[in-house]
Image 1: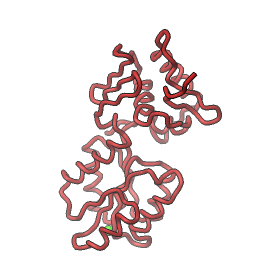
Image 2 (image 1 turned 90 degrees about the vertical axis):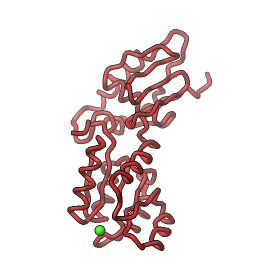
Image 3 (image 1 turned 60 degrees about the horizontal axis):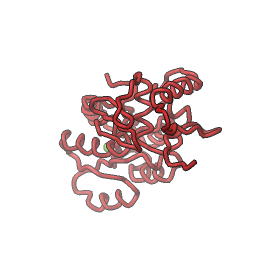
Length: 235
Ligand code: CA
């Protein structure tokens, strides 16, 4: 079982055996998997769950994969989700068109699961770096995704698991403003009923853990919007 905070991958594949193979391989990597067997459903799931990555089959019944990709990349709030297109051998023209539509990468079927998973990890490194073991730095903060330890100005931080996940999300996207709802999805997981004010409680604990005499508070409260990790502001 993948952790609630593991990166989420949306698999769009109409052939059940292929979809199952992908699920097995992705779960083996510790990732969570959502599945759609047609393009319409894929677009709905992408908007509702904001997956960290989409694996998109080229040949789908109804809406073709290329059109799904175009709409994903044009849609607000989901255009930055990386898309890896899965195409059949010999679709070289399609391959070019696939990239034209904004697909971030493509893999030709039949693919080796090992190679595909390497591409998946490479794409996730951009958006979910801490989850795939990277060391992140921002200002005087450092977070090691492999050892799951964090420090400020070289001094180790004592963080609970929720505070660690909050800091990891912030450090993957410094200066991005996170709504409480997005933080809930990201840190507590999907379909979990937690009140948004719980986020404020844990942000408070994270602030306390990060506090250093004379050093600025790195977490900015953005009124009406949420929170951001931000050391850029000059007093
Ligand atoms: Ca297919």
